[in-house]
Length: 426
Image (cartoon, rainbow, N blue to C red; front, side):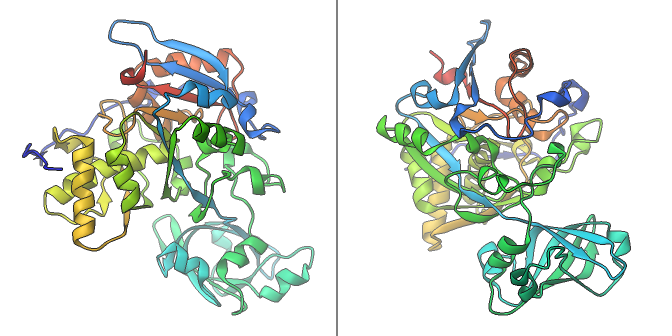
């Protein structure tokens, strides 16, 4: 593909959007938060939103998730995030009996997730630490109240090395003949969201995980994907729809509410992702709507556009900043940008793009890759709610009001929605 020489305008004096968070919130009653998943993944309610043409009223309909294959256009390409949630919550104990919770956030040494999970004997991670004031120094043994002999044989201990901002550098040590992935499986707890206000249970091991989860690394599930069953995926394929997978590891920052009055003062969390060249080629060559399954897939698809622009500008595409989309202006199409990114990777003999994104999608954002968005209902005062407002405009309030009035279940284990941009509404 020959890319037209459209200019890429980069402003050094751009104006950060000054949206007030109070204009993008709502009241969520406690009893509307789904504490547990439904018995069947695909039995959740599904709100269908058809974005109107200018001057028209939106069309909002109620359906059931199992019917999704009959709702999406026949030529859709769905993009799943195949990240796998790790049992990242570990509990250690002091001689005094005090318990210290250590929540693994991301690997520090080695930094690569695959290598970190395959480490034997020792690995260093960035962690959140509960009750940190009581952990002065020394190695702490794993809390094993049932005296489980298998866990005891691991000999797992944690040593605090340093503190960086609001997270800690922790070295884990254990019996050398077991990889760290197995250590977590035996010792860790599923990191269900704090707003569920309950401890993780046995059922969460399966249900707080998509059926297509493959690559370990997330501390939160890409929850839009929790509704997909083998039955739904099978019918999508029967209807000749395409499915592609990316990997974006969801960080604990996804639960962080926006505490500042203005979005300009909020620091967005950063998440790593990876996509093979074949994935990029599928996106570039596809004719029809791109369906983001969840906000994580959406953030990745949108970030790819700006990585493509970076490669056109002669930069190494590896990171998309929080405000990059707002000070970069270009009429280069999504497919042209992807083509440039593919060219960069092939020239450098890179088979898989490894990058990270801090992209913040808020009202005024121009979507480049996402035509249809499948998503759950998000917390008030969250960046995810701002993303929904960016995609649907002021209609986000109609969507959430409809869901509240019609007994939809909210947040991670709640019900779903499929949001169509006006381009694909008939």
